[in-house]
Amino acid sequence: MSARSITSTDKKAAHAKKVKNMTPAQKEAYKKLTLIEDVIGNLETIIKTSKELMHIDLSNTGLNEKMMLRVVKAIKMSQSLMGVHLSGNEGLTPSLISKAERKLDATHERKRDVNFRDIME
Image (cartoon, rainbow, N blue to C red; front, side, top):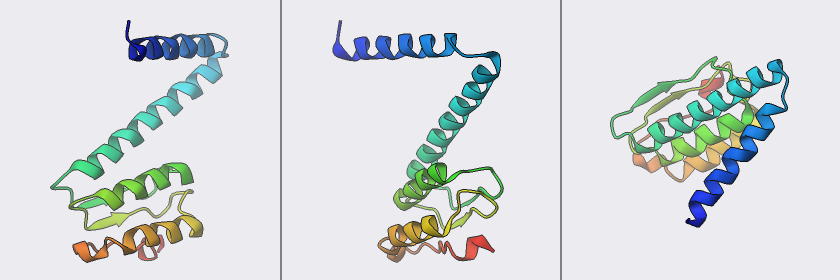
């Protein structure tokens, strides 16, 4: 067996044990959290790799600061994104806006018009 399959098997066993010891309410919350993490991961991939995505509106989607940071990092790597809307999310904090602006300042010459101050309005 390879080290990778052992690691994967160990993770699956730990996950099963963790879920087994949860109450039904905890299991439901855990399922939702896992689904959200999967969605954010897919969103990151789409933003980073799409050559045609020019505009994305994630306003009022319940993104927390951790999720927003992941999205901002993906935006930095985007090859095509020109517009981003993130207003109405609890994770859109002044600290994150500052981080986002610093991350995007270096890539602004790629003709992107992403202004994180405007998206709060």
